[in-house]
Image 1: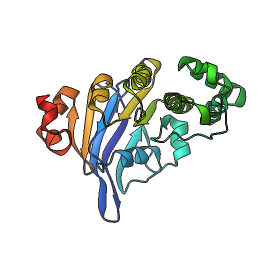
Image 2: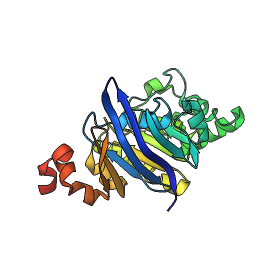
Image 3: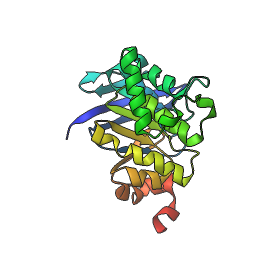
Image 4: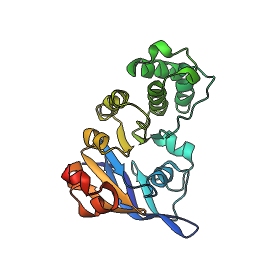
Length: 241
């Protein structure tokens, strides 16, 4: 098993509050990794550190054999890490095609960027909305567009930050079905979600954070049975359900 991403004793504080505290784990190429934990556990800070929006106070972040903890976000994206956001980050007046092509343009020339964008919209069932401005799209289409935008940069790793929040069960399944196919396409997804049913359905491995520290790392079944996870996050009712 080859680690595509490694965090080694990474730490980040804000005004004396430890958001990430001596955090270490590997992400294996081709797995679907879930990251869970209570509000304030450090999940969003973790993504921001990996993507270069924040700089670690200490520790190393290694992607594909390269140290990235001091690189800018656009440099990290060009290396092959992309992310989605909890709130879809799009230009409302741009068409779906232009939105995805704009993202693809970070690593491709214009003609190739539009070819990539057309292929992604087709793959995610949005081809008939290619000419529609994003501001008139449905919530599930916006989530799929956000995923297309991230994948347009041709990443090896994609960070999915609550990409299914606000969706109905049926809509979430539509997005989830696309996510679980990503490893077969050479992309390793890392998912932050609050719904354990989503994590259990998508992931074979889960890392649990609490107060910026890793308190568990294992299969969904192992994590659900872990006392520290039950006490800090899941609650006893999950185990007895």
